[in-house]
Length: 254
Figure 1 (cartoon, one colour):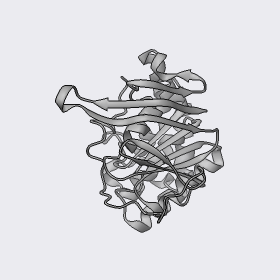
Figure 2: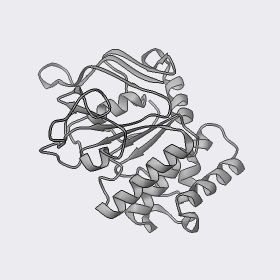
Figure 3: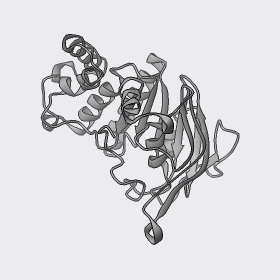
Figure 4: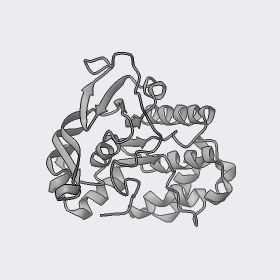
């Protein structure tokens, strides 16, 4: 379903250039769940942005359902993102002026859906994530765990084929993070959605059947992928991947 073929990506020019991803080969099948492990600055969020058509490679190909993101028009990539790919980010990325229900319904409305249908689907998703009673609250009236559950509902409302989660528990305490991860995995299984989970947390990654490690912009095979991480740890990890890609949490159309 998703294939990265000899993909490289960098940012900047001249002496300020930074090569983030180098000659990456990666594939994800329909319904498959994969964890991408890496420390801060390893390139994992850049790889996720490439997988989600938020950016295009400098070289190589990113294929989704046999279509090359790099060969698509900007409007076509935006359409694919809206209809086939769901995104969950560490910092929620909810619109503060919209209620929980309105945030969840937004992908359907942007995809041309009818408001009445979008509202019904949003309310159904909020009930599934246990927030139906908070549907009309603004993000500022919700806890961190509640906001991330709204973000999970938003990511699934258009029934995407692919769900991309970038450190979805990184801003949450351990107990809330576990509950949110349970929700993400459970809903992805329920919907038959492929899941690519980016994390620096070995415990979170171990919840998924296949794990791949990224180190200095290059992939290493891991558990379920024909390799071994050794001691299973990722050392020297910080929370936010500040040096990966400028504006990596932006969902605006290109």
